[in-house]
Length: 461
Ligand SMILES: NC(=O)c1ccc[n+]([C@@H]2O[C@H](COP(=O)([O-])OP(=O)(O)OC[C@H]3O[C@@H](n4cnc5c(N)ncnc54)[C@H](O)[C@@H]3O)[C@@H](O)[C@H]2O)c1
Ligand SMILES: O=P(O)(O)OC[C@H]1O[C@H](O[C@H]2[C@H](O)[C@@H](O)[C@@H](O)O[C@@H]2CO)[C@H](O)[C@@H](O)[C@@H]1O
Ligand SMILES: [Mn+2]
Image (cartoon, rainbow, N blue to C red):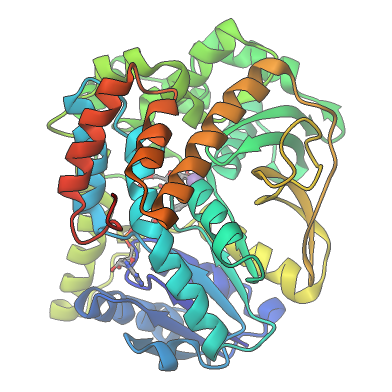
């Protein structure tokens, strides 16, 4: 069993490798390969991964670190894709350009997400072609390269036969927080959900067979935020940290959610549920339902990209430099948690045909009867060796369906515009996005984005 991480220089690589390694028996993994286009970044992360596999866990798993496609993909069984096309420098542009025009600037939502999508569509297609050329015919690509909604639509259109499953860890991160709030184990939770990626709702959260949404509603109302009580001890300092964008030094998974801009993410769940209490919203709906408020509490000079550069990325690479100089490892420099565990669990379900239930981004095919057949939706599915078998649901309510159709068509227009090189379609995608106040503002942002993305975007005519 060979698993290749494409985007092996990612800040998430050490955590994912640890999750794979801890499930080595179920995955029967013989070799892990790291592949990236950035040789130096890849080499450094490779040093840490080598330590995890061979010094820390003392495992007999071969490690290959490469920038060569043939070496990376030949006979691979799984490819876990986590590319950030353009890096944090371009994420900063995605966030800051719309904010300069008074609009939501976010990694995967609004115009920032559309811009990131334009950069990622063709590198993803290239990755699929490389994998098809070199890997085992039974390969699976588990893709979490963002923006997953646009990437999955582009793959559906351009490579419909590819063995790729697109996934997102935000819903499971929400379930982690819900479990802490309800003081139960996340293993006891079964949930129902519908939506698009970063655009969906939990319709049911059962804990040991009991519907817990009413209890969760009360919790959120009482605390005025969806964060576990322990994290709320000092609300004043939380808010101060949020305003300064300070993530602090701590690294544990949930604590990071109380720091920097994440605070507003969990606060927004309360604000949405005050007006629309029926379902638990995905945190990303904040950007579409509270556009004005998001812009008001954002600092266009310092966005989430800066926070990540100064914390997760800096901690990782400073930690690796220190290890190379002194031989000392501080495990807190790398992020490990639900993200990697979930990806490894999904690979196990595919490989061992377990038919376990996962939330995945997949072609609708009637699962949501009042959404288009070919929409890439995020819904629960049983996962076995043939891929996802989606679970059918009742028609979704008009409010959610209307929001989803607007977002879906914006994303579809972007993909069509990228493929056809059509400026007009891309402008329609921007204009249609719910974060846009007018077509004129959409055009101003698009023109700035074209300038900033030279060398990354296809030419538009
Ligand atoms: N779907 C999800 O829920 C989810 C969760 C976490 C992260 N992500 C995504 O995972 C990716 C990695 O995030 P990160 O913060 O660790 O970023 P990062 O910049 O640290 O890592 C990304 C790596 O991808 C490499 N890369 C860029 N283009 C490439 C290409 N064409 N081929 C191969 N490698 C390439 C970069 O050199 C870099 O080493 C991002 O796309 C991020 O949005 C998704
Ligand atoms: O701003 P970032 O880079 O820290 O996070 C952006 C990503 O946020 C979500 O994933 C989180 C997840 O919610 C959290 O619990 C933990 O696992 O880290 C992830 C990455 O930060 C979202 O689902 C991703 O798509 C975003 O890229
Ligand atoms: Mn996500």
